[in-house]
Image (cartoon, rainbow, N blue to C red):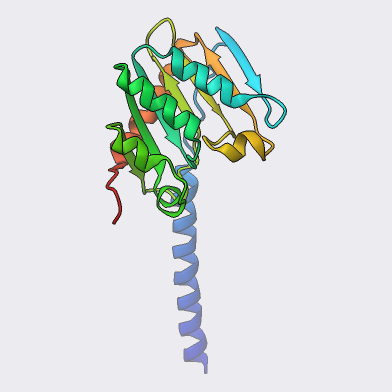
Length: 197
């Protein structure tokens, strides 16, 4: 019996060491300090659906884009936003979309297949349980640079059924660069969208 108890003690000690090591690894992943504060510059617009028309802000920003639109999407079912992105693409704006893989494959009303069919470069994020960012970066590095973000998904429901928020930030170069660089980091790990059967 003592031998079994000693073996159990060694097993428990080994398990404890493994748990502590795993905890240290996880903790070190969260030890990376937050980014430095970015000075507030430029303008800020906010919308709080369903009371405010956030979709109008999104469509206006896309319509005003001059050179580049980078999108991160969790759910993307809005036909209006999809049409606006396709129109921007057709007028020569570089449009690229990153989307959550699971949402894209599971939602019958996803606009991702239509964007890809229109010639827009679409990639799917598969590394994360959820690629939950809702971001649009427009014309980074220009006088018209704009970031749209918040809880607002690019969906009909976000405007008409949900309690959401959208913030539109214009004219803040360091902030736009941070979002632009983060988009590129995600794009480097994403997989090209392939239409399903």
